[in-house]
Image (tube, rainbow, N blue to C red; front, side):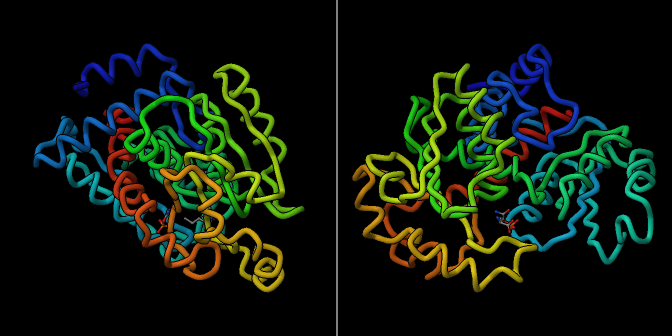
Length: 321
Ligand code: CP
Ligand code: NVA
């Protein structure tokens, strides 16, 4: 089993990122090190041990402009388990960009904390935080990406299916979660098929980056509109809400367009019989996914949610330890 010291030495020798705003800040080596350490940390945590504790007093600012269950709890619990502290800051506390300029918040925080984790509406806010921050900045979800989520997603795929190249189908909105999942899956050599309604495909800049990763890794990225074609013989089916945070005014139009993209038992039957189903959660039961699928034997979503804890601990230990 990998030790923290081995992981950290490999990490330092593998061109590690200063900030983690996008999956594209990783390379195939650093991505694999985070995942391997996360598997080791999970085994240790389950036997009531910890592979890593911070040697020096360590505190992180946890900025949340939007609500969260999983991200907040796994960050706070993970930091607690590793002997560090998280300071939870909502938009009503600090009013980033209103009460105080983003760059001034970054400069202040760097004097007190060893890292900043932020969930923001605009990805450009993260880029500004990073530009003016003396400490690492980590994306806890933006309108463009959810890179911490992708680590838990691919860790779950590895647990269930091993590390061989697989066919991974994304069905629904080409949103932030889709972006990060596609980038990491392509980086690790998987075949990614994405089925979205017209007008809801992933951003072109993300697709270009993912295809560049796939060219190097032997994977592929394919864009489709037919959900059945996307999941045909797939090993993994992944979906997310049709109305992401910040898009509530588009709800009615989106529900109409996304209806054929529901992950239900009929769609699941088009995939391999042992395919697993992923969802980053929260789910809108009866919209993008049915109860039968979410609660069914092929659902891996609770492991996936648990793995948010282990992957973030691994990432923070590597970036800040
Ligand atoms: N998947 C996820 O990020 O969940 P939360 O929005 O509850 O943090
Ligand atoms: N795409 C969703 C993910 C929530 C974790 C959103 O941005 O609201």
